[in-house]
Length: 317
Ligand code: 13P
Ligand code: SF4
Image (cartoon, rainbow, N blue to C red; front, side, top):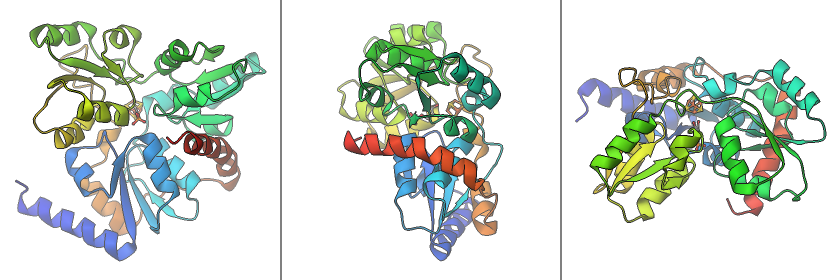
C-alpha cells in the first residue's frame, strides 16, 4: 500500500496533467509506480507513434533522452519535458557523430539504417530509423539487392542479419544492460525450472540469444507472455517490463535473467531509473527540463524517422 506522501504526490501529478493538458508517456523499463501514472506505456515504436498523434500541449517523457528527442522531432510544436537530462543511453553513446560519419564514408553506396537508440546527430546522418519492433520488417521491405549499413547495436545488427541474410555492415556498438546477462546463470535457472521459457531482447549477445525460446522487442516479449502457454519465464531484458507482464498474466511467474556480476544490479538500466515520481512532479510543475532542438538538425532527423513511421504504417506495425 502507498503511504500518504506518495499518494499526495501522485494526486498532484494527476492534477497538473489535467490543468496543463499534459500527458505522460512511459517506457516499459520505468519503475512500476511511474508506469501506473502514465497515460501510455509502450516500447520505442509505440511511444513514437503516440508522441506523433495526441492532443496534449505538453508531453512528459518518462524514459531516456533519445526517446524524448524523438517525441520532439515528431511533435515539434509541443513542449516535450524530460525529468532528468542525464537519462542517456550507453548504446546511443557508443556511436559518436565523427566516427559514424567516417564509417559511412568508408562504406559508401549503402542505405544507412539506424536503430532509434541514437543521439540526434546520428539520426540526421541516417536514411531510415528503426526500432526493435520493426527492424527486420523495415530491412525486408527494401529491394533484395540493396546494400545496408546498420548501427549502432552489433547484437541487434547480427540478429537482423541472421533473419534477413541481407548484405549488411554493422557498427560495433552495444547496450551495457543487455550485454550483462549471464548465460551460465540463465541456464542454471532453466535447469531448476525445466518448464520455464527463456525470452530475450535482440540486444542480448549471441550465446544468450541462441538459448532463447523467443526473441523480440519489449512489446513482443510482453505479447508472447500473454499468449504463450508456459507458466514461468526467464526474462532477458530490463526487469521494468515484468511489471506489465505480471499485470497482464497475474498467475504466471517471471524471473529476471541475472547479470554476470551478481553483486552489481546492472541488469537494471541506470539511465531509465534516473526518472522518479518526485522528478516527474517537479518537472511537470516547473515545465523543465525541456527538450529543445535546433531547427536545422530537427529537420534532418525528421526525414528518416518519418520514413520509419510511413513504412511501419504500411506494414500495419
Ligand atoms: P524497445 O523498443 O524494445 O522497447 O527497446 C528499447 C530499449 O532501449 C532497449 O534497450
Ligand atoms: Fe539504452 Fe540499454 Fe538503457 Fe535501453 S537498456 S535505454 S539500450 S542503456
